[in-house]
Image (cartoon, rainbow, N blue to C red):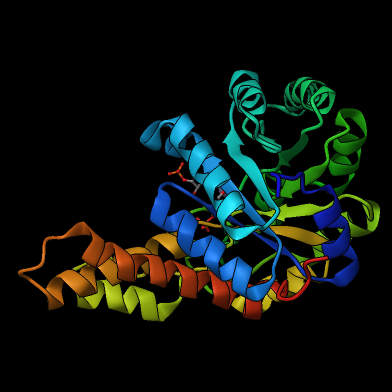
Length: 310
Ligand code: G3H
Ligand code: 13P
Ligand code: ZN
């Protein structure tokens, strides 16, 4: 079984009204937990590697670990670069065998984002690799944020059409109110579904991507806090909103923070309950299981991608 691109996966998801989970990976236990869950659920899977993950593990380790996961599980997996910030890192990953890259030019003015994205698309497509780009800036909707502030940061539907047309990008990450990390909303969680519907209607054939889509489940925050952690006030995207988004053209949902919380809660719990244990395998086993359970929960109840492997 090979590493594959997301092209057919996204077509199936778009048609079926579900989303594919894109999970961030940093080490062996995280990869194993995610892949075991996807295999049991018979779900398509995207494993994504950030620049920080490449630096932490060194590029070759993550690539080889993902290759081992493909060989061991027999699953087709997409290997994706998350938030590539330059042409150079995208090229390095493409040359390394990644099947998908994100060029994140969202911090640049519109024309510069287009030029950078187009350069990556041209190189990637010449090597059979697909590209995700981002338009708009991730930020939560706060109760006191007015319409003009929202318009300045969230993805503009007409610009999205022009962006996709001029870059030839394969999928587009949009900003509708999500943000990265565990503290996403100051007031009630809200996403701009009206904007999402407009973008989907204007770009019916472009798979949309939601970054910053962790739910920050209260039981994991509680567990982290109970066992010596301190992360008060964490708040994520409610699961019903993610389900709604997946019926409105969002084909890829990015999840990292929820995995971090699950893994850390499991390690904290184990070490507090077993203070004399110091074998890393002893505390990394429950950590790996916690990752698996979290991913299985997402696939079944949030993404809707169980039993969709063709
Ligand atoms: O969107 C960012 C991901 O959560 C990856 O985070 O850059 O700390 O690896 P990282
Ligand atoms: P979270 O921080 O909500 O998990 O988002 C992860 C992400 O968007 C990775 O690109
Ligand atoms: Zn992201």
